[in-house]
Length: 336
Image (cartoon, rainbow, N blue to C red; front, side, top):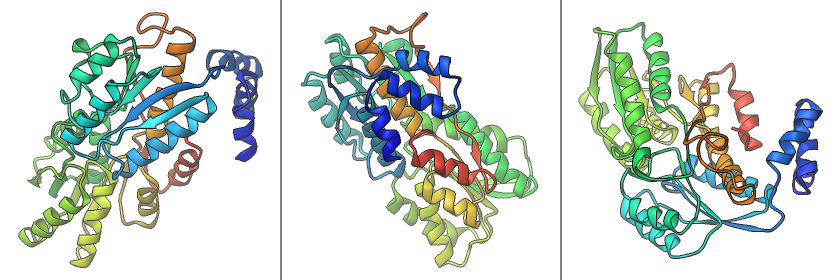
């Protein structure tokens, strides 16, 4: 690991050598090294995501800082603190300063439009991560890197439905309702359960990614409903927080599915506490934002034809016991 880092931190040629080490054709690796080469001069980038209390966001920060070192980018973090007003204050602060580029995951759509537009108007490339800052036809972000959230919601829900043979009771615990990722995951859940008339959905209330709120909600749900077949959560943190409540009430027969495939969830899938999760690739998204920002500044890469697409899908797979160890390795190395 240390050797790989020292190679990558050297030059575009070093990056090409590392890519070749991953089994990529040497000629292709050399060309990729040129295209994705690090900046000769240090760049300054501002990053923000929804809130570092969430493990997905914390992992994304680590990934951005790791890829930043590889590409000679100093990353300054503005924590969203899982609150729209707090993130808005942080982004207002960000917009008052000069950056080579910025990358932002909004806690809620439409909450950051004004300060982001201020940065864009100042010529700062802004990369949108994971959830829409505003509809793409209404804001000139450099690119939007995000998973297919409907796929994430539908794939895990389908895994749960298959496990209960298409009948029983289900609950969906949502993230923040203003988060476009959560909106997509909810649509994915609904697209599956509507096909199964023998499934009754008992509750779909949001918990805003807050594990304390999840615990309160699930104390009530377990008292109210003596039979719950399966539960889908919009992220793994909420799923595991609910599992702890289920365990305290001796209700661990409830099958659990989550999103993000974070290391604690990978362990839970492996030992059977969770049935399935799906990877929302925080490393690919945050690291990709570093690469996109460097390309915009150093190579002058524009948005659109011949440059970076406006919208890039960054999907990861559904994770079960079979592929959890490989997913853990890739996350450890900030690859997905």
